[in-house]
Amino acid sequence: MPSYTAPTRDMQFVLDEVLDIRNSDVPGYSELEPDFTSAILEEAGKLARDVLAPLNQVGDQEGCHMENGVVRTPKGFREAFEAIKEGGWNGLDLPEEFGGQNLPYIIGTAVGEIFVSANMAFNMYQGLTHGAISTILAHGTEDQKKTFVPKMISLDWTGTMNLTEPHCGTDLGLLRTKAEPQPDGSYKITGQKIFISSGEHDMAENIVHLVLAKAPGGGPGTKGISLFIVPKFLVNPDGSLGERNAVSVGKIEEKMGIHGNSTCVMNYDGATGYLLGELHKGMRAMFTMMNEARIGVGLQGYAVAEAAYQNAVAYAKDRLQGRAVTGASNPEGPADPLIVHPDVRRALMDQKSFVEGARAFTFWGATLIDRAHRNNDATAMGLISLMTPVIKGFLTDKGFESTVLAQQIYGGHGYIEEWGMSQFVRDARITMIYEGANGIQALDLVGRKLAQDGGKHVMAFFEMVKSFIKENEGEERLRADFLDPLKAASKDLQSAAMFFMQNGMKNPNEALAGSYDFMHLFGHVCLGLMWAQSARAALKALDAGAEDKRFYEAKLATGRYYMARQLPMTATHLARIQSGAAPVMALEPDAF
Image (tube, rainbow, N blue to C red):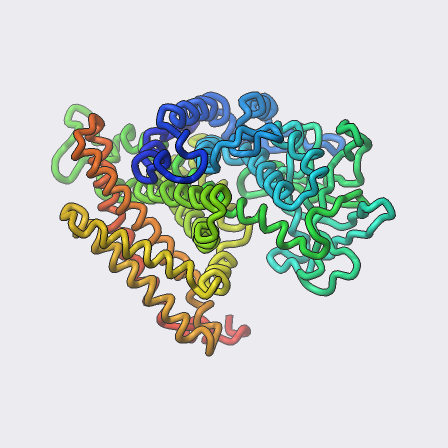
């Protein structure tokens, strides 16, 4: 059975030395002393190691099943859910007035990584609840907040998001679920939703569904969509649970992975719903949850890769196969461990350099969210809006790729279920699809985010990279290995953006045909920046005589690997972008 240990040392390095959060002007950050944050991460790590990780394979093998219309979760899930509730983990970064602890979002992000790495399918139950809470807090009435949020923070109730229907996925303008207004101000919701994660289960008293539906008078397409709160059980005026609402499970979806999460077909047969936010402006309200979810899915991409990587390293050190070409490293044994072979090292370094860079990138994104919300900083909000499709799309693509590399190190054993590596691959695969397939993320990045607010956010990012390089160009130890590659990659990104500006207006296909490459090009530059910042922090620690010398030396070596072996991919992506739409659109549909 695979194991997992929370990488708290690396997390602390990112928080304290790369991002230097305690010296930030964001309200609440001054309290994030290393002793305090490490205590939180260590406790989360114990829960992940001892409770959640042992249930990961159990959930995969047992899955969820239906009993008289009730979904039963795998053995041990209910007890684990109680442990999450008792620890107050769901409310770490949520408002105190509703039962949360009001810590910054960055802490919730770090803890979220630990729980996802240990058991992604399980963590989705509370993860989706968190997103639903954020949406109600942002768009709900005071009565709605008081009615639903405290119970959801405590996880007595959980939450979902209901968008997709059998005939429409991304194109929500086609949805058919109807909302009929009632004399008491409520609505009757009728329709069917599919792919609803955590749609029904046996771990909470109530499930609060956020449902997109069309109310009369809204007009065609997405302009006519509204968002509704539709609880599984209606809530009485005193807060107690009333009668069962007219919402039921049609079936549990049979999936490639995340078997421990109940992905359901949900049927709404005149269910009572309550308008959340403004009428006919449901998409704006739902995107509060969608944007949080997209960053969370990006985190899932690298968090599952972290767990797969840990097990691949252990196997590579233990498994004896062949001899090192430079001479036996284990002369007393029948063979050398796999880790002596250069190609195995390559695969492990690909994973390690990606995961550690992705962690820094995601944590930085979390600090932007804190700055946007706690400082009311429009610049930070614009920057994280730009980065969201990159975090979601790039990190999940590369995260899946990393799990495959980890599986490959096991050879044939990686393909055998008892070793657990195929589960990481299967679980990671969904991250590239849900919360907006990655092709949609690329289109959003190029079609909307680049030009947002006159392009000032992408220009701010270019300036950030330029300023970092300029500030550190006097450091000889950074220049050749980190700053020069970062400068070249940033120029590739700017050239790609310029190509879109010069050609996209005349022919939109010229931009959209290169959008996926642009998302990856952007992702590589972001990780290159994170590695350059990490290298600076590591050198600073070594110069100060840090006791953990090996940690910082390994950090520098891993960063150099990324800059030398991964970052040059920006040139390939740029060449593809500059080839334009012609190669992509050359064939007529009937020629495929």
